[in-house]
Image (cartoon, rainbow, N blue to C red; front, side):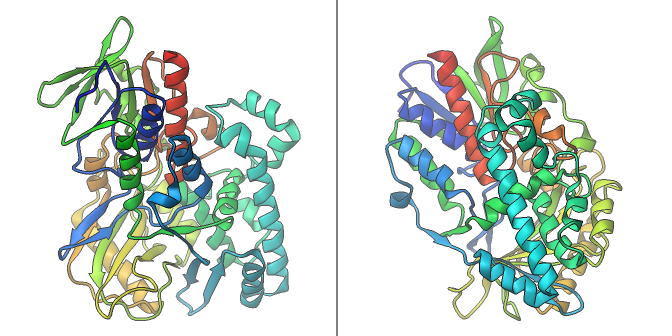
Length: 488
């Protein structure tokens, strides 16, 4: 079914684009979604290993209410479309000396686990950390996370100067965690929240403690895998009249009369548009990958401001030991690890290794679906990682898993490097989270939904409010709202 009038063209069926499409269609706008891949999801993707689909992107969901409100606003129900299962554990943490920490979601159980692991003082430190993370989240949720794009002065006016300073924007996360956790192992556990947005805790502000609060407030897995979430959003958007075209690569955003007026596809076809929502790396736009006419719509992102990339291994394999749904084997020296990635632009010598066991609690007697990940620099367009360096990293990563008690019998696997991510999501050298959150000003330098080019809007993890599945969904909501405001 073709759109009846000039549609709002959404470029990309990632999380932000899907939410924008569903909400715009629910408001009666003609919507055409153009996606160069064969299916929706963007970074929520699956790869085929031995004929079986294995999740190769985000594995767990936070901020369930964001998605419930999207479906409700579009006249539907999240519960009717998806089965979400609450996860009782934030993760299983392991170190090379044999130490382990299972960290529950529930506050009292988590405090007790930390007390058993590191003593009563550590439990008190965790309680204070949790309270601090909650205060930061409550101060910033309305005036920042769910606002279109506040500047520092506007944020201070809404949150209050005391609330803004209480969010610790001028203190590095790593330093702030030292106030609560003298034990370096616990410091490393909670420093990982910075990596959830592709940033180094050595440079990220302590404000990112709010991510810990969000995670501790509730964590869900999606029955059938995370890829069912974008499929449900696509079905929602279609039900409200949105049209989807896959295998449709947009090469240029057309500009006429000083505003975005349409797109040109790789095969030469042109599509006129009432407005354009770009769900892609904002850096790709600034680099001219969507044409010179739209390149000035956002600022260029310097390579040193990019977030982390990753090397991932998607497998079907038997695993020894008892892995949780999310298991983390920590680096011997996390400071050295972050310095190697962020400052030296190379793979870490002894990395933190994250393992997601996708069949946790329901695996048949046989190979399980697994995803293994190591953080990596996003320099694929400037200095690609040598193949032998990636191979060595893999050997080290799987050896560390085995030494920590999680021995994986490697066989068929799909490896994705920063260069692979740059091919999938061009414009950022393989960066997976848009701009890094380094320094207090980073939160205000990320582009908002509106761009300098009238009629062109941004959605996705490289736009405000930031990276992550729920944040990308909020960006789609912001984009849809701005289109409606501007178009009437």
